[in-house]
Image (cartoon, rainbow, N blue to C red):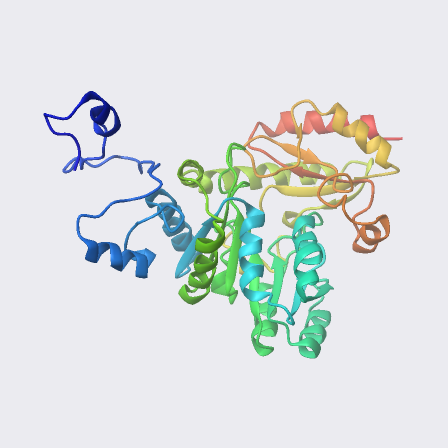
Length: 397
């Protein structure tokens, strides 16, 4: 393959840069493979790859070497048999729902998960015949009762809930799920495998929005699901048909982010604990939600004392309007609808992640209008606190 000496300029322009092996040289970082398709000199190899994408690469919708690097990396980090990457965190959630939430089935979801997760189930899957049961995943008696009554196909919860930072008892949820024939899916976006490995605790499926801490730099979107080979193969077969795949550049950026994940999660956790303790001592703050303030709660399921970079708090007497002033006042913190970046980010759940729900629903779940969420970055913690201090003053009656 490639260019020969007697080819014309037009042909050379198309083929002169065709890939040739650079062996025995080995790149020190994984290369980016931008090809949309791959060629074979032996059709037996092509047949084998079409039959089983794990055997190689034929078309980028079926698999890409850069994307496969990310999938292999995350499978090892989570202690899973396999992983599949998606173009966004919500595409990963949809990948799970599409396999385990079939028409006629019952699904249990923790009610204080990311708002779009509930929105996806309510607005799309319930219309196709799935029955949704919203529970407090930390109320194990409630989960056990609903599961025993309806025999769900899927139970879905978050390691640390969004935005109230409740910790799910994964081993207990796994026991309930498996006793009732359900698959347990755990969203580990807030924890990452550096803090907790849900599969070791009994979860069947672990998913991430890799846009957040995994990527870590606010410059890439993605999602990933890890689990046993049969589950991931079912999701991969579906993704091959509907085209829910990430691009190689996104995968490469995510891999690059993972290289420093262990360092960043320690820095996020250390800063968040200092900020949480400062908020806890501030008379202007009514409620502070951060798992690190109760380090002994379900401590056995965490790999260390670190509890991540997410916290939320309520400003005494603040309203929707005054919380808007808080968002306008922050200078170092970014008022953005994301989290997990190296820079500190804040949002107002009633306006952002949970704006699609009624005030009554939010109130019932404990997501009040004066609740604010902060993703604590890796800046100097004194600078973070200084900015929070003046922004809280702007929202304080």
